[in-house]
Length: 322
Image 1: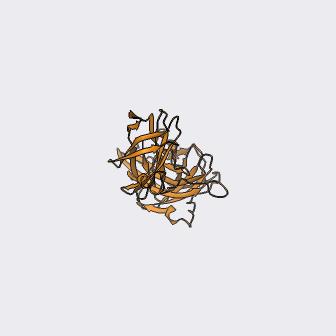
Image 2 (image 1 turned 180 degrees about the vertical axis):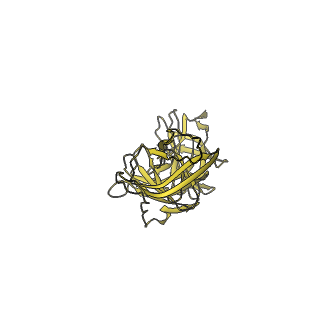
Image 3 (image 1 turned 90 degrees about the vertical axis):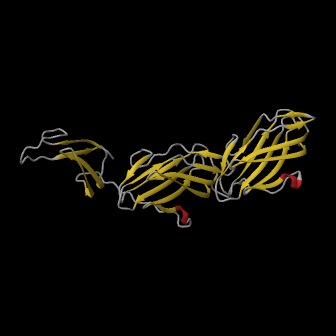
């Protein structure tokens, strides 16, 4: 908490030309109630030289009783939820509330120096591999997204999402410590009660056989066919088998229908609902081409993607539309 105002009692002002043998007191007032001040940092200038003095564990007479904040324990069944970076220990406390997921993190500075902590928007991929971005989070200590944490002080932050999720396949926690960006991935958190929901997974099958199955740079692809003869939609599933994110772009293409070149009305990646996205490790999504011209068959259907900047062109011949 920030002081409400500070002044020297005599002369009732923030500055004083101190006469020889002069004495007074400095009053520092705060707006919030407290029973114990874990950490008090107090800065002053003497002949334009700045000094900072810190005090710890000060009992406040007449204050309202409040609990001193300590780290909440992380679930010991998931050791990856406890980690330390630059003398700051973090506990990821999990996520709740399937209607609009809420994820919590605690942090304590276990070092000897003040540490700068910043928090950013985080991301989840739900049971359908659909990406959600959080609302901007703030640090509990002062309600800002970046702050200095003194030694020994515990704080934390809450990450809020707007849309429902029955299960979180991947939660990406993004933050920085002393201006160095970090992220952590946490997996497979069920928010709904009862049996687990169906999760989008990769099946290495295709209605056109082996021609519809291929691999590139650690990604597995399976062409799942085209449906809807009045407005065909053609789908390719892709799974990331690597240990890192992979950037995918779906490119425009030209299919052949009865000797005529036809371009899709839209192409998109299902997880982001646009033409590009970062696919997390282990996650499956779909690459979708939508056409507005009716047909029962494509004479040829080129599929065009980029994976981390490398181009993939795959041409499928005589593709039926169900």
